[in-house]
Image (tube, rainbow, N blue to C red; front, side, top):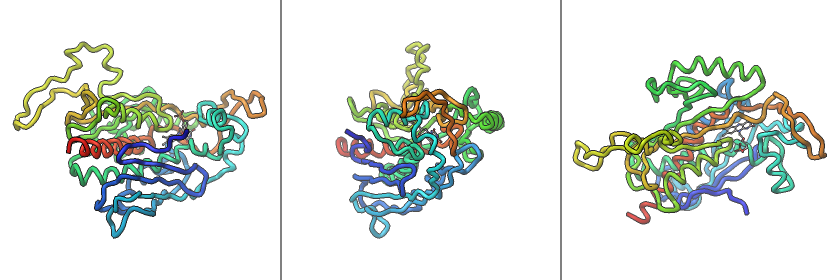
Length: 362
Ligand SMILES: Cc1cc2nc3c(=O)[nH]c(=O)nc-3n(C[C@H](O)[C@H](O)[C@H](O)COP(=O)(O)O)c2cc1C
């Protein structure tokens, strides 16, 4: 049994491989009569596109999206929206050396163990090339949220650590994320990250990172207890991104040393008189699996890229022990390009949960 779809009412199915002719997705369940054009999607894809700095893979793809169905005279029709991106910079020869050997840390061996066959070109279906379609679907989810919730709902992401170097949260400035190649919200951190990644690149190695995504002005009430909790679905969506090894909501693993009174977010009546006012947000905007109206905050730890120039022991399909060195074009820090992907996954979950909540609660 295969699983290439996610979401319940806003349902996204992706298809395609790294080195096939194209990748695509089908979004089923998008509400009708929403204005949608390629220009709503393309800017988000441009944020994820490779080759924008020396700190991401040098694969050069314009990632030009085409809407093939589901939109008529500039509006969604309620029928499946099909999106397509052509692959234009495949270089299969880069991967000849991994055709028979397994990259340690990558999905090669697991695909062979499961399917007994694998498209080794660029990692095939396990390549993060597929995440372009998640970003495209996320752009459509943003259109749904903008129209049905309002423009005040924002979904933003940032890189908060590369290796041992973390941002100083006191200097957090969202506008800074647009001023450097790392989506870093702390301007003073950028120089250190640059030096670190330059030396990692020279070694032919890679390094891990931490990504944070925040959705603000999320209406209270999203989330479907008990088995469709908002936090559970966000965790699943983020954990499903290639290379993600841990997800936290709100205080996350930080709850361990806390006492109850430190972790509980005190509540007062809002001065405006409408609704509650929380004095802190350890919960990450979600209680009982339901959004409270506070910012929804999630973090994900992204592993160091496994395709590296440093030799790592492995085996080949002929049964020999080998040393694997992966030539080709790779992200020295996956976390950087994972930021727009994390934002997109959060957008898809929120759009889906919004529609489900509307279905049950009106
Ligand atoms: C945006 C993005 C870019 C990635 N680029 C690479 C890459 O250049 N080389 C690589 O080995 N892995 C890369 N990965 C990670 C692999 O796709 C991932 O490690 C692989 O599919 C195995 O899955 P797993 O790490 O979740 O077990 C990238 C992941 C993301 C999200």
